[in-house]
Length: 327
Length: 307
Image 1 (spheres, rainbow over the protein chains, first blue to last red):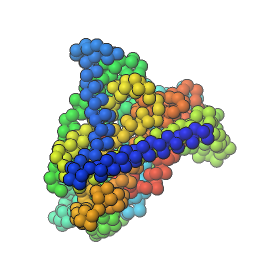
Image 2 (image 1 turned 90 degrees about the vertical axis):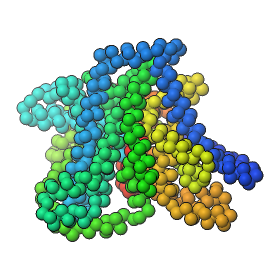
Image 3 (image 1 turned 180 degrees about the vertical axis):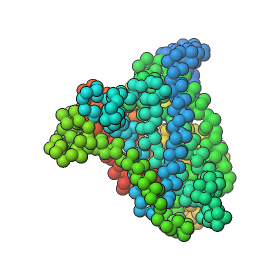
Image 4 (image 1 turned 90 degrees about the horizontal axis):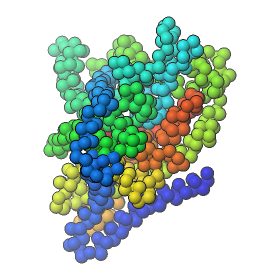
């Protein structure tokens, strides 16, 4: 164990040290050049490692993935559009798409609404109470889906009828006189997916709450006061005065959660492994890659997902440029 | 994106106190209505109880934890069954102690190396003039939302050919590549708010770019560096997919993979062990969260644009 720890420390130090050395060398190289050239070359040397990392790890593999999506399972021969047509016509994959769609429809909207609810409620409390409530709702953001999985697997735990229940949800159900249910296997109405979404919301609402709360605090007091003077009710003030002003943040939160949901992997993988119709695109990608060893299918799934994400991505970049313009 | 960026930019330059003070609560000075308080208490209840169940179960002995609900400890008659042995078993038998070290070994370099690389790049993008600057920056920003599994199939093959699959550097490099866009984006946004005159006067005084960067810009960027470091560290610490794909179960597996594989995925591991393993994955993030809440919230909100 001690050797292992020492080894680890050594690897860590060597890794970070190597990165520092690269910059030292690059800087020295630039200083060797004549002064005029130094100024011309230096910016490129400064951004070179970053650009190299992005090219090697994002750009090149991204393009290669598109190529692989037209090739067979071992990436040895091109098969045209076969991966796509076979996937899209298979029942299993269609099911995966529908489940992903359930996530996309329910989760971002619920995250925004719940976040908005919590944010408006805590805004009315005194600062200490507000801070405490925010901390409590936000802390699951820090936890991994594996950690949160141990929390929620216990909540949904199933013990056959007649024995004492370990999971709180079945304990409540049996206390009310019903039979216990293995919640994560209930396919009807995507009930099990909805239970996964509840777990997702438990960990993500804190994020949307914090952003929306900051936006609500940024609403100029004068506008709210003016509404009050004119005799508007609290509900009218929220709908007509506050909400329009925090709309940009609402959109940001929605889009961010949407992107997160589209590529969601760990919640499903930890909780159900994608069984019982809970499979989503990212877990299907993993299955194709590691269970079926089908690079072609895996790559085709990624490409379809990226195509779906592109409109959202263009939106994000446009927002960014708008903001640059107003800076 | 306006609001995601502001927490790193504006909030960092002016202390939070002045923000609050700008908004006197004259009209709302009256204490909140009791229905509001009740609603907040109910919400907090729903957030705390799930976690409480896991914490309590992780201290119950095997027989108790698997044959009765954790809430039965509300009855003091059931207080005899508490134990610390679950943690011992999880750390030693389920190899989570080893995994904890692995997680650190993966997350620390995967945080600091991209931070270093991105700081240099962000400096160049903010304070140096060169042809192609804006185009390159825009390309980097638009790559922000590429999902990281878009790169996995080719890299897995490349690693296989190079024979570095399953090693720590293979994951570091991946996280460096995919943390880069976000880091450059955040750092440049922040550096753009620093007064340009500082850099100009430093240059007149004969300071090289390297000195300006190292002596002035880096120290002044501490808030955003901390925010990104915390975000990236927790992102890597909590990551499951990248670790599964490039390292997988075994002696180099980080906590997330080990808990999923050795505890959750195994039949017959009792709830006492599963919950203890879960708590072990949470300890460090929760400490970071409580100790650096302000940077933490800023980092996570800023990092939410990561693809």
